[in-house]
Length: 125
Image 1 (spheres, rainbow, N blue to C red):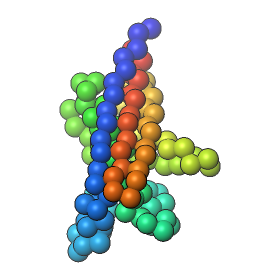
Image 2 (image 1 turned 60 degrees about the vertical axis):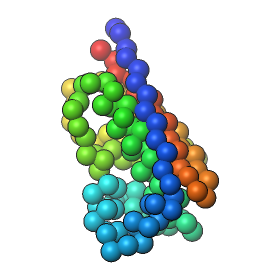
Image 3 (image 1 turned 45 degrees about the horizontal axis):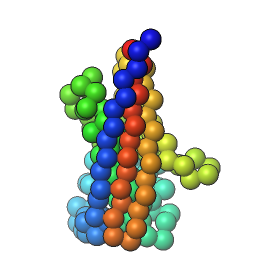
């Protein structure tokens, strides 16, 4: 059995995401990018923009890893869900059907200004 490992990374400006989620485009942006679970999670935080930026960055990193695999041509960000375990460890849920056996891990970090994420995708052939 062979495996293939792919990486993706992304950095986002928290102020850019804050501007979007505080604008008239907020609801459309959230529904297009985030799942209901992600929206509910971020909106419970004292500074939702940091958490939306972190989730957005993680989705971008996962997208980049998936596209690097060349196993898919495109993916809607709403089909990538970033949740948290009871210990606040981020988890990736891929919400699309695939005949591929894959595992994806993600790490998210943020400051008041930036959120960054790194994704590691393993596809077992």
